Length: 205
Image 1 (cartoon, one colour):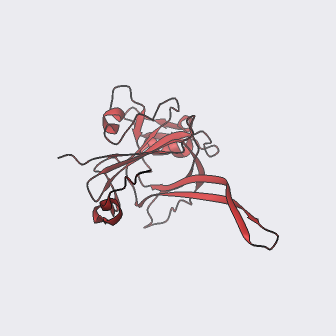
Image 2: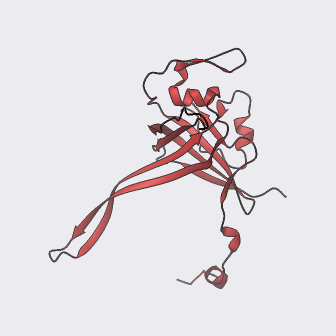
Image 3: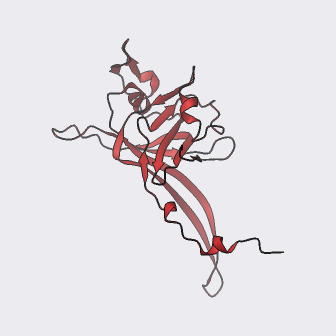
């Protein structure tokens, strides 16, 4: 079979591929409590149009802490050795995808609904929080999305179609301390077998 790899593919180094992730201007983190929403067609190029469409169930979660969000993948492996003790085979037997973030707009109704459950948060006529009646940590899954701008101008959208709270950080109620809801979410796979979707959009010219 002929080698179709061009020399430039092997020789080229492109610093534009090195990047940091920064939030897009304005809202960069969103939630959708309706798991029937099909997210597979939502892309970095059309997400704002989709989220703002009439009847959309996407909601803004406001500002995050300076830590942004962190994706993690933990694996469990079975290591098989030969009679002489030499490793022969390594097979991943279990994998768990999680992500962690810290919400700083704790007085936003949507953030409270995510933390305490929709049914446990009542809002006033202007949409502000009226009361919260905590029970247990919500176990239901939600859809979450993060939009970030890369240094080369490209937009990256990450959507977690089945995210549920796995753990909650302590909330500091001390003078001079910022109130934050720090949460780690478990990212389960959707009906199509994907724990998350990532799409990119080219910078507008």
